[in-house]
Image 1 (cartoon, rainbow, N blue to C red):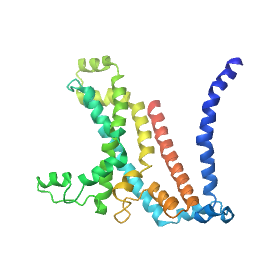
Image 2 (cartoon, one colour):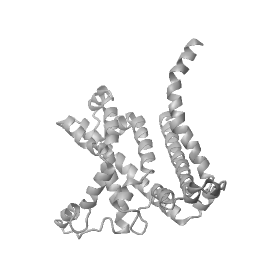
Image 3 (tube, rainbow, N blue to C red):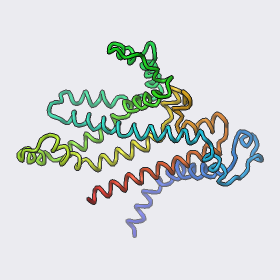
Image 4 (cartoon, rainbow, N blue to C red):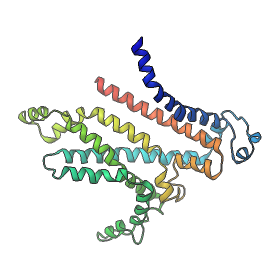
Length: 292
């Protein structure tokens, strides 16, 4: 009993901080989503009305919400597998015996993760410039006509996906590299003695041993990519033709452009439910894989 009390005493400061800076704001935001809190209510609380789940119904009947949801799902469905694949390929290269200067490459490839999104997004806008961008300049040497990366609705989201993968893959790379270095070398040695090729070792040893790490980076990447905001905000402002409007960007406009904070809070909780559902599915798939 004394040990239990001591444990609660040690945990109390952290629980108080979590409750004060996380649970209370979340509950307040949910209460806000049940009202029509806007600029008029901000000026005078007597203008505040309780609307229940009216905000949620209105949002679900708003075409722009569904457009932003489709854009976000496109970003997640394409960007997450691409980011994890690049992270895994880079980790495998850094873990191989052929790689040299591993410390330098780990630092260089992880550097984009710790840089400011806004700053590098501005740089990428110049790289993707139709006439003066380095990417189109390079493509021109291969006889490919310039592409309006950020002005063409067909290319705007792929351009943002390309930027996001470059910006974020280093984080997953470090996690997967640590997991690779934790695989016992005896397994590979035994496989080589049995005549297993590199691809067979990858399929039957590396990937099964990496399953917990791959599940972790999948959940982290999915939850992060659903919160797409800074990239379209800086690079395209949701254009062209609303092809890069994400759910979070739509929420930002509702809350801080139109001052409909009640609707913005409702959008935030709809996004939370979506992320919770997708990550729950991923965790369930991961548990079934471990059981198999």
